[in-house]
Image 1 (cartoon, rainbow, N blue to C red):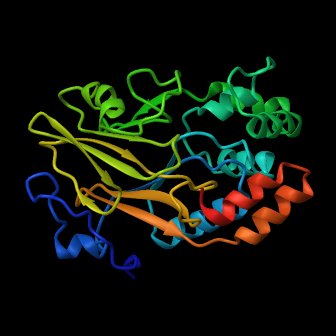
Image 2 (image 1 turned 60 degrees about the vertical axis):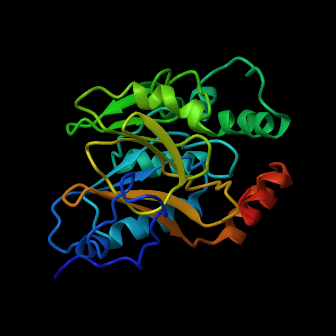
Amino acid sequence: MGRPAPCAPTMISCEQTRLAKPPQSAMLFAYNTMSRIALISDIHANLPALEAVMKDIEQLQCNAVYCLGDVVGYNANPSECLEFIRSRQIPTVRGNHDEEAIGEDNPAGMNPVAYNALMWTRQQLSEEQKKWLRRAPFQRILPNEIVLVHATQDKPNSWAYVTNVDTATHSINMLRDNQFLCFNGHTHVPRTFIRHEGSIHEYESGDIQLLKTNKYLINVGSVGQPRDGDPRAAYGVLDEDSMVYYQRRVEYDVAEAQRRILAAGLPDMLARRLGEGM
């Protein structure tokens, strides 16, 4: 039996020279594909969202899953989400909330809501779980030279935000001659930056036929705390055979995630923003 096809994708609108449209067979997730990888990021201790995303990944029969960091922080199930990732041996890069969760000092510059959630999160994690987070690298390079980071490629542990062409430029220019694709998270907003013939352009993330003559920085969005006005969990799938990237959105039980936040005594703002996708 072949792999299931997802719902019809919505293509990014742009000039044909910058983004090529996937062939029709690729848009239907070609049944005979041999290598399909899922990219998840910014789970932020939201177990209902993580479980829904993983169910979607299993239905699409992805061959591998990679996590781009921030497994913990903000929401009510940091230990459970960490065990979910660990038990499945999902390769993970370290995010800023992961980094703060394994620290002992008071973080500088963190807003009060995030600070309160961080202090609570540190108490929920075992020493073994913290050791696992410490072993997570800041960057991974896959055998096919695809680069994975949480924030930026040029300084992956500086936790800078890529929000426009200017801030994307350094990461894209860090890609070597044999590299053309970097995935990141951190902003919680799906976004695609493409360097074509020396110029970098920004697009809302959608389904893309990737061309090795271009360079790409693709933000896969957030599983556990989306901030683009869409409360559905976000993640990405790369079909390596057709070289098509698919931006996925998944419904999950937002009310249950909100209930857990309030039951844990975390700030109610964290519950409200899940319903707003902000």
